[in-house]
Length: 231
Image 1 (tube, rainbow, N blue to C red):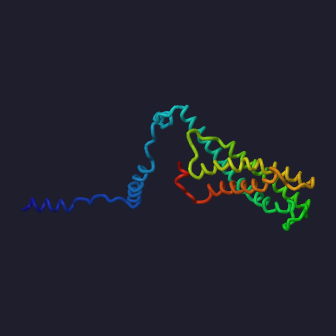
Image 2 (image 1 turned 30 degrees about the horizontal axis):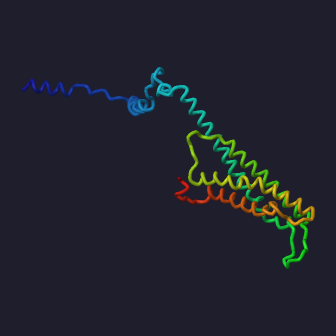
Image 3 (image 1 turned 120 degrees about the vertical axis):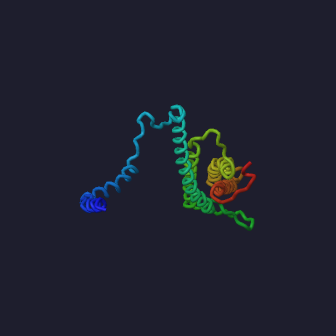
């Protein structure tokens, strides 16, 4: 009985466990909250000898150089074809205008079967010739950018692009023949002659050329997809 009383008295006389101060609590709390963030934001630095490279992935220097050259060729082709497209659309305006004013540059004969001939005015001839020359210059610039655009090996045009390219065989020769026939017709008019021979085809060749050229533009601009184009 006495021993149990002594144990109880001794237990009551034990000092309390020390409690941390406020500064220590804040330091411990700050350390606990910031330590996981350091582990997340500071990944282990990779070994400098194990960095990835194209050679390490199995690409030879020749292959990487070829890819860079191909990309440069694609960029050049994209640029040239964009200029080609822009100039092509611009060329259509003076081309149509040349046809529109052609009536003022041709002789007009009496519809009653008489021999009365009305000669074209010099202003009408000059305007027609000026618009025709502008059309030819723009057409040449448009064709230039299509020709110099780098070709991609193994890529063949199909669909609307193929039709656009094939129509060149119509409007290309037409752009050459039209001014030649026009010059012949003008020469015959200056001599007081009625336009005859192959020169009389000037107007028809010009209209065919404009039609083929406009169709080439529509082929790559209009949402038309015909299956036979894909063959």
